[in-house]
Image (cartoon, rainbow, N blue to C red; front, top):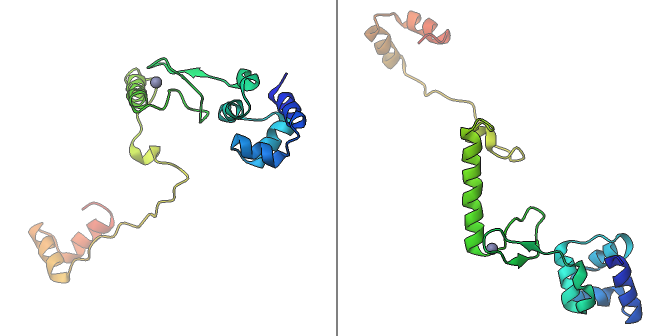
Length: 162
Ligand SMILES: [Zn+2]
C-alpha cells in the first residue's frame, strides 16, 4: 500500500477534512493534496504523518544513517548526507574539502580561480578600468626621464608599449 492510499483511507475513516488533516500533521493543505492525488511527499513529511497519526504510517518514513555518528536521521534536504549535529556537519565539510583537494591534485579536477567559481546567477557590476589622469607637467617629466619627447611617450602608451 502506498502512503497515498493509506492516508486517503485514514482521512475517510476518521472523517477528516483535508484542512484538518493538514493541521494535525503540521503541513500545508497543498502538501496533503499532493500526497492524496499524486503520492508525492518528502521523507520529512512522511515522518510528520507518522508522528501525527501513529505506527501504521511508520513504514513510509525513510531513514538514512549518518556516516559519522551512525545515528538514524530523516533527510530534510535531498542533498543532505549527514545528521544535523554540528560535529557531523563539520566533519562532512572537512571531508568534502579534502576530497576536492584530492581530485585537484590527482588531476581529476582543475582548480578554478574564484572568478570562475563564483555563482553565475549573481550579477556583478563591471566597471571599466580608469587610469588616473596625469597632468601635462607630470607627463612631460616622465617622458623626459625616459629620454623621450611628450609626443613619443604618448604614442608608445597608445600602442600599449609603455
Ligand atoms: Zn551524525
